[in-house]
Image 1 (cartoon, helix red, strand yellow):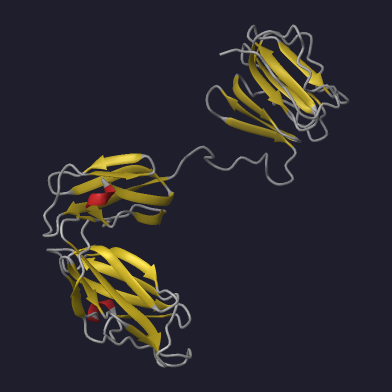
Image 2 (tube, rainbow, N blue to C red):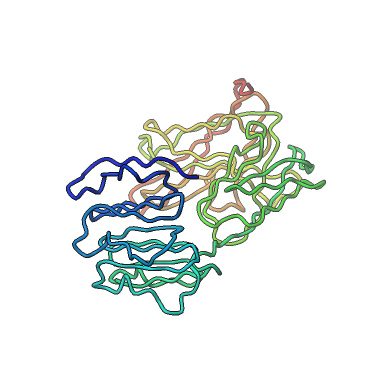
Length: 347
């Protein structure tokens, strides 16, 4: 696509003065050191602005051009036949095009170095390399991916077919057993959701993907409840910033737990979780001041954790924690007896 060219801004060297007879332009490149180059629809290259190093002096025998890139004080252009030519300032070898480069499909000129992509997809860089900018890493264009697996069930543990899972642009659908496999997910920070998010818990799962993972499960939300409590120290003072997590035991599999909610205790030491699927939960507390974690009702490990029941349309209260300080004292969690109050959470 070609069109009219407009330039504006700093113009000490005429770099924004578009020639009157330039005509339609297919590509433009503006440099950091006061010069601008444009390729017309017919492939003619025009450069304007500062030319103390000859960066705007287009070679007379260049011919038709398909792309131009303006560096600090040098210019590179690809001819219609795929040959790369560079000219202008050359203190670091940035205009020294490798002899065996071959046909080029794309070029990028920087301040003191240049990179080009060949027709076959090979990347070449040359020129200044003070910060490793011309050193190409192994497989620079390869995107590392991983696979995510899991299962979507109802509250009774039965698999749900046809549920869509999505993460970083990749999507998959559960099979007849409720199982899914998301492949080719780019590694890094991932937000995994089951759609529509309003129907499933947790609403989303956030994690850093560095390798293949499994057991990223979701549960259909049909009956909801809530739980709440308070975190204090041995003097009764509220503890703020304690991490509280509620994990649901998946029906039919006592060894699989799914984190449904996580929060920090507030200034009054209180926390609450609403819209939890009904079921049996283990509740953990982590105090960053003591770097100790415990489970509800003075339990030291997940295997010993007392379960907390979340029931339909009600809040299970008094899931409390007590931490002893200073650091050299034992951290205890003391349950004060769970109680249930009518507190609808649906809707």
